[in-house]
Image (cartoon, rainbow, N blue to C red; front, side, top):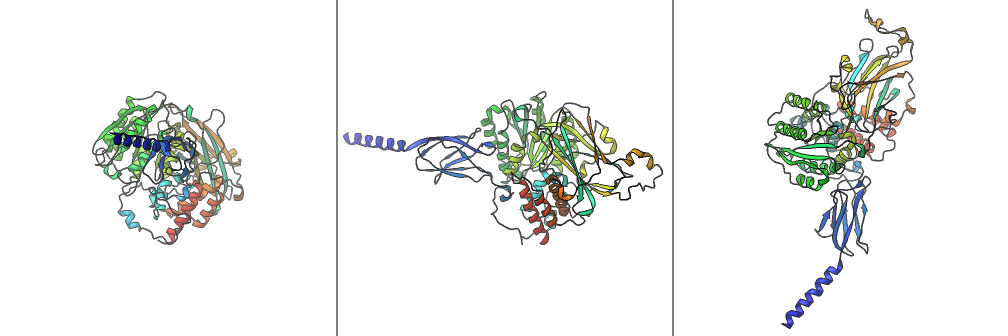
Length: 597
């Protein structure tokens, strides 16, 4: 009996000694943008750990002298030895984009070179199941017969990150995957902010064309008004998630779930989220839920698994039903479709999808698209869905791109400040012989569409910038040479004698209105030396040249990889987030791949 008592006392003292050595450590894990949701806190050398909550907070039992390892995808991580303090706050540093291989989560070693990398032949690309809309590059138009250039704005950026995916996987992208305007508009530009009640500012520059010094380059930039996060209207968002078998790869559904967790970080308690999934059939995983219960939403996301075929049409109809049932008047009512685009069961034709989306758009429910993965990627379908649904289209090739689209550019991605935005430029034949709009091939409108308020056009979100570039063949003779009998009637003596290069018109609608408003300005014929152009001008020109080289455009003239690289470096500017540095790296990769074709 005494022996048993001694054993119990010994166990008691040993247990107390063990627990006396342990302590409760709490803290917050953040990066330069704020607290991190889902950061891992692990005791080094063990499997014991925890994750941070929505406010970046964590709690863990640990012994003094042990090391805590803090990690989060897209950061460099950190290790901290536990001392006397019971509070350990950590700020992680984001890894520069140029150090990331944009397929999955694999890092490229610093200093690695792409020289000598073998390429994948075009036959292999053709054999893949990826699909892109086919289009021809805009050609030069003669001003005397085509004085007006009319097009819809485009703030989608999917083409750039998709092209990046190809290049980082050591392949040159197929020509139709390269949409130059989306590559240009992937980047933000330092334009003047809108003033007064206008939702936009218009910025222009005119200088020598880098790839053809006989021509001029006209840069037109639009800056949308920014709305602070706390002033944005409440959101009713339905996540429409593809969980079919094709989404099982690590850079599809797993990346999708991590991406949406980042998005939840910006949603407020007055916002709500529902989750609809589709595979062999569709269903509601989570009814519309207040973002006050973010843990509940994350739990529902965590349970998703891939399997089955793809009933895209059925899922889309169900998502719209949920969005209508939870409609917020004067709010942001939107479906967020996340998929590899492989709609292969049910209502899958582009025409049927388009009709459904247009009907719901008129009821105030938009749709934005996030694309994932490779191999069976259906870019053409996703572009149509976003265009017709008054939404944005982004391609998520890694967690850093998700952070850019869903966190840093949250307002622009989800909150529209103007819809049906159209440009119309009238060129003065006295100064311009011919012109060519670079990109926007699938956004070209007829002249009469500009004033037609029933004609759908592009949307601009909070803080978005839109950039368009024209290559211009000057009229060196300063006279009209048209042989058309009635042509000169269209040009008054005043216009011919003016110093105006163009008259620029912009038409847009308030997101809740059906009648458009007009902004009009003129641009003088006053080209500046190329050396004095802004970093905006040089960098956007570098992207245009890069895009023409990737497409092997017949308009590339004297464009080379080296000249594009030089331009990009000249226009790099204050590259705080590393996006422009990453682009410079992509030019070098593309050059190496093209040399080894």
